[in-house]
Image 1: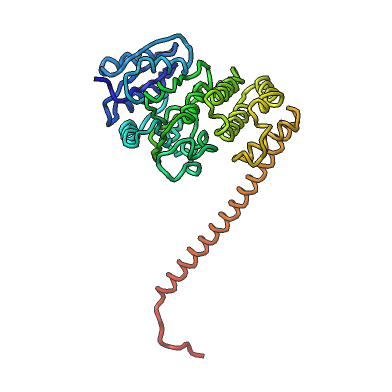
Image 2: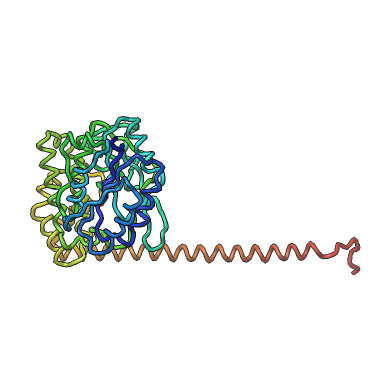
Length: 380
């Protein structure tokens, strides 16, 4: 009998965090699943760790490929998947013990194509967990618990992130829509997840953080953004083309241009080298803003006004002047923060003085209460 869920997990040089990840998978309360691990050409001991776990778990499968990146690894996993539902996990994250159970119950109960849950950030240095609302933005969700693009056409791409690992997908839905991850080193999930939202007849959510997303370790592909600075544009071009081919672009155009602007500004600001920064800046200014129709829309069409302001400044200034403007803006921000800190320090000093004065008064009152009371008036 086939499993209900197929978990697909690319593994690339994840030795440092792989054991906690696998432990949290095998500790799940829901056990009717197939775990497909795709070793993506790891050069550390990741494969050895996987093989050691496979000895004790019959529902675990391991496949290996050259370093072709997560998108190709996920597509391989989908070809091997037998489950009715799909989860795409990352090998450095951990998961709530009821993650599989709650996602499965919600998606089957609602007969949805996609189920999305909340996310905690897991600090790699301290181990602390903190809720991150960007993975389930409730202000963009409709009142009904099951929805689709028709309910929120302008926000269907924005109520969560394009990461696949906090989402469960119906395998039959993915197959019917012929969706695959792009074979890109980075941003290979943008097309897959966004097109899934565009095509889904039913989407549901769980307002609870069930995934612990590890941050701060610097080994993910976002940390190496400057090696391939324009891959995000390839993903957006494919998304636009596919939406047009399926006759969905006109309905979802506002959502698309907002998504495009977000990824344009994010990828510019995340560059780590001057040459990569200049490459992205020039491409945005000379072609991409126009190609993604950002330049044809007015400010009121964008729901994050600060991003639209960045677009205007990029179009207004050459790169070096824009950087000067950003530096000045950052200095003003630091100055404002310093003023706030100084104000809080002054208020804190005043509160400490009040507390000290109150303590002195309390001791004085206590001392006075211990003095013997005299009924006799002092003589003149």
